[in-house]
Image 1 (spheres, helix red, strand yellow):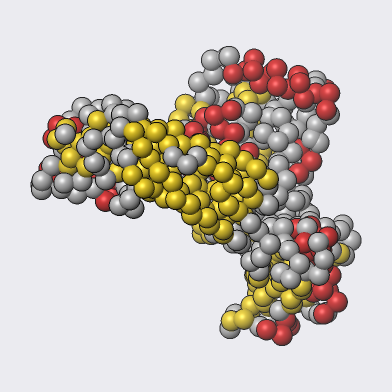
Image 2: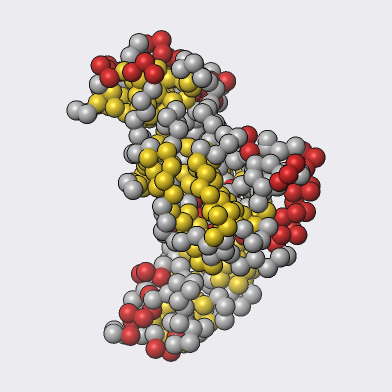
Length: 488
């Protein structure tokens, strides 16, 4: 994923006090708000719909990361302050906790092509700033571990004195990224407020493509991010590219020969070692203070000499299907009894892998009348779904995908519904399939337990105008639902 941009270790004993401080801070009334606009913060890309599954961060990026000032240590020798390790992205606020998820592929990366970078903030409720600081992750950081103090360099690479004056939205903070930083990194931007105890902590996920003038004629050309656990028989290939396209002679491939090698950190290390053993004009690893590049079990950088012609590397995973994966319905009732068209369908499933599963019950016309989904561990698991249907033969379909996405398994079992039917038929349970609503579409409104039919053209155009924040035409509920729907 690319979004082009041109322009702890804390002591364990401090954790409980940090949580208490965060709770105390949440009770204060602090009206300052703002967010990192350039490059875009993780939360801002949630609001733009580029990052997904962000929780409440997508609605108010200006509030994300607000907690006590004092990162990375306490002020004046006091205990550690600022966000708790593992909750740096959210600031420790539960409503923004989705931002604390961390993996090599979880968040959109903004490409940085120039080490001379201008940071810009937007302030929705501005307060004086004592300073703005910019930290960056250490070389060799593990992008699949939660963000902690130890993840970042201990000192900021750029500090802007705020003079305790109110900052201006869009003002440029001119900084220079460290020469030894390339590939995937997280930048932690901090706005320290002058007239409260607060600071705003915003993280930005970046892919630094800017060429570094490294000693010895080396240029940064990419990285190896240990992103996914692999199985025996899988392959990983570092594909080399020049200005004219792929350069197969500089591409390197490894196979996963045993379970231990499948660990993300281990295969990243093996690939880096193979590159170094194969080529003299390309090196993979982490540079030390003397300029030596050695592989690590974690995130490795790639460097190339100019005469190689290599400008970038891409890491490609060749993942085989998990042939041993199994999933099936373990038990269900012979029949389920409807009460006024409703029933709770309980059943159990069994798998030998952790999976994301979705179960759907179809009636005899192949219309879905109930569904449930979730993540299950290997072994036996119980599931339940609420169903609205009529008596007759039904089909229970179970689909599961392993967490790495490589393997899907399915099981289908017949079942029977008896008892009292729902009466009026419908096509969808609102708001499912809202983009497909047209004249004559019948939907069940679960909030009122009533069925509504979309009006003929041209009023039918109102039926699909729905979002959680614009629900005026929601059947039976919205202020203008009568313009779009007829109740059956």
